[in-house]
Length: 256
Image (spheres, rainbow, N blue to C red):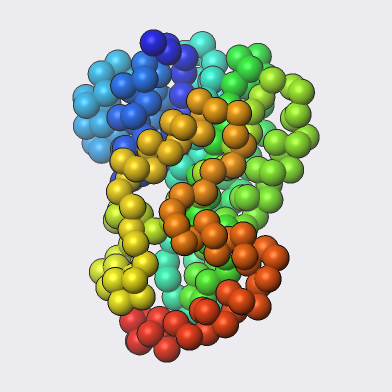
């Protein structure tokens, strides 16, 4: 059994909880990170001996205090950047504050945490997993900011993985498709049903993460046909342009 430390951000979300339970069964010592102390304490009770850390990771001092706590617990072996936000809406109706929130939470915070924890990870020969999305490879209408943040996270992960090649630190990217969590509101769920888009369980995502960290892979995409579309979009984006254009009237109907 493993007894090394994992720092898990966004621990009380749907995917976060499933990841916490999966890692706990594998013997990982967990440092659960989130904004809701009560929810963190409930999760810690379900995963006994887990540590919790409450705070807003967009704050510099909060991130530093998190790194200090991890160091006191022996140093991080596995950093999972899972915290994220999303709102499906047009760019025209998006405020400047919403732009900053999405890009800070989904992109800037993971980058800064990777940088902050790099010394500990180099010492432990550890692993970073950045949780992305199929929308990190496929630009989707009314998901402009989310796509921008996840495209950026995918590029950052790939570049950092290559930068740290031979250092003993593994940097990996996991890309779920639509998942059955609270991040998807009723309109998004109805739209996915109308379009025939499948939604995976958080437990399936957690299972895929375990496969990723226990392999030599540095990237893993979940779900068919989404991972096929991601490959097609990289080579023949006009094919995906045309496919999504046919969906656009239905998408707009659920936004209005």
